[in-house]
Length: 289
Ligand code: AMP
Image (tube, rainbow, N blue to C red; front, top):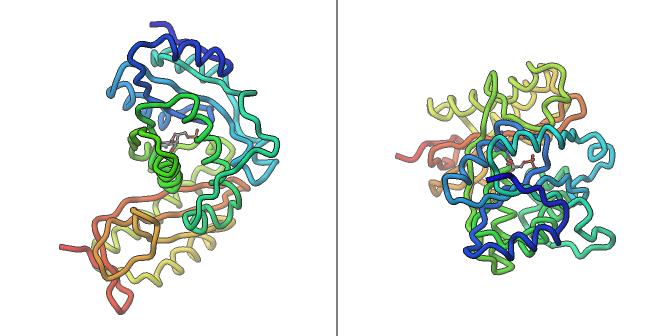
């Protein structure tokens, strides 16, 4: 089947209304596609026949206008890849959303954590546009990457709070050379070594936890080491519970190490899943047996 390129919501709705069994797998992206996005598409294709990729650089989720302007765009290359992957539909909603004085979603506590702290309004912007997408597309499934782990929790909240029946499917982080988490923004970073340092930091912490040799206060040491090694700024380095990004407790829980750095003016995020762990009174992290 030929890939349909739909340039506005009228074109999209016309096609969606013509489908008898409307079971759409939706893969939202901001374009400049790479292997991480392709993995989401491959996963969607395994789940059903109709897949819809959106490409939209969402202005509402940028708290810095310069970052929005500099966001890498490569629409012709993206469309070529999507055709090669035999994606059913590509939706380009460039002018479909009313963004002037649009109602915004209030997400509560989740925005006070991790990326929400240094990117004010970011998740409200993500959630608002996702809501607009959900209302138009009404997908059966939505495919999201674990690279943006907090975003998954935000989108799950929107789906639940607004009574959508969309099922969330998540895909592990796709990594490149040296373990670097692939990202559309990586091409703006000249020294690739700095990206490897971020991944190595996560692996070092995980190894120490596995060796029973890690205290929660050691995070400060790892942060300082990154800055000493030439990373401009570490926005956060935290270990939190996967379910709601709350702090570790004495109750064993699935947890993750989360990091955000600023490298040459580019925001870089990554995370790494851990086994079930708990916090001892002395601050040591223990793997639950
Ligand atoms: P973006 O285009 O950056 O908004 O990302 C679109 C989707 O692709 C989101 O669900 C991301 O989490 C996912 N994604 C981006 N990079 C990766 C990666 N390296 N591995 C897995 N998923 C990714």
